[in-house]
Length: 573
Image 1 (cartoon, rainbow, N blue to C red):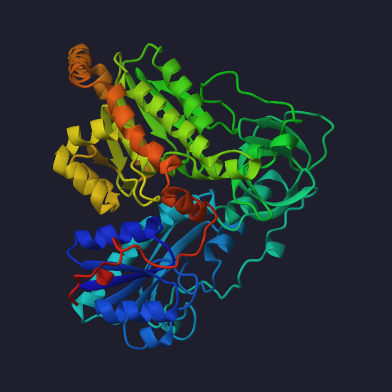
Image 2: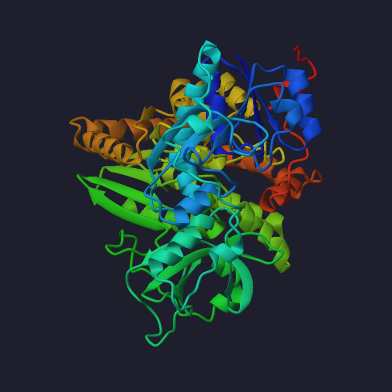
């Protein structure tokens, strides 16, 4: 069928659905929901058999839903209605939640049901639940709904006729519903409130007496800092986060957004103020035994080293790249023959940290200079991985990866991705960036010169399965996160125990030496950076403009042409 995806943004769910529907032979085009007239024009141009709305922030106009079947993906159980479904579920501690695919009608979220799915509601950030459980459930439900619609002999079930409709109409969750009472709320309650607002809009609060929105909370098992501190007091800092007292303990806050600003690590958003707090560093890279905030952690099992790096939204600043490189160099000295880079639960890496780069403009700094420093730190990290000669290295992608993060992963000997992860191995969407991280060396070796040009030119997301088929990755593993971790550990242990491991390592070193003799890594780097220098310092401001709008969440004014196929000049409806 010809299916139009009408969406507020090209988020992870939209990417996954588009790829899965295309894989099943459907013709897909995408239109951002900018205005009624724009959506109406897209429908007129594409002439879809079906419209699917994975992610909307407003109602589809009657001029469209009255003439076309429009399937709405609602992140709530059957009967749940309202714009804050997941927020309420997390904050109220629901044990089970779900996704409903319903047909658009005049009443919001009240149309007949085409499909639904439920899942245990994990105690986690809203953004994490959305990227994992919601996306997985929504994908299955939408594919089921599309099959039913295509069959032509299956009618949706009216909401009133659904015997399992236990949801209810709930209003938009406002900041008054999210207020943290630091004097009374225990750690679990505060975590639920911040988790329910994570990603957007955050919880309105104060830090250092200044109004802001807070995000990214982690529990702390050991109460640190001033023993006489009162609930709400700030106790300590560690890298990018601060520790705050609750009524029964403490938790870490990783990110904040000051009024009129954008989301930043707390120690950057409140740099001068945080400098007055005592530091609470961890002693080493080893994974802490008790719950705490630890963005880089190392553990070993069965002769395999596992390096975790949980960076918020997968963004890696200059200092984070430098610290991760130091951790990797340290891990390479451990008595293991296999090193697995695990990344984080939601993201492996998305490359350079655009928010930190943008922040340089707020502090009399240079975003161009910070961009340059950041890409060089990414390159240093990638080279540290490429030049690992004493271990077989694996990049295990439990979560999504984008831009330079994809090529950092490809710097490992093996790349294994979890079924459900989405990869965006290209740069041009960010103001026509050329990219670095030695991609001109790493990518053609895997997919060939023409394949590399196609990936960079098409700028389309890859599912984990498609990435393995193209050769960009080496395997697509189990979709369940726990099963994925078990599978990764098993495969890594098998490599570590292989009888020919020493021969594998010798062959790897010989191959690297031949490549270096043919063309040094330094030459690839300099060629890539020559392009990046023009992106950062040249007269075309496209990268800086694109970064500015990305960081400040500017509303889209048009749909990129590589997504809206119906707007191609040569399009024939």
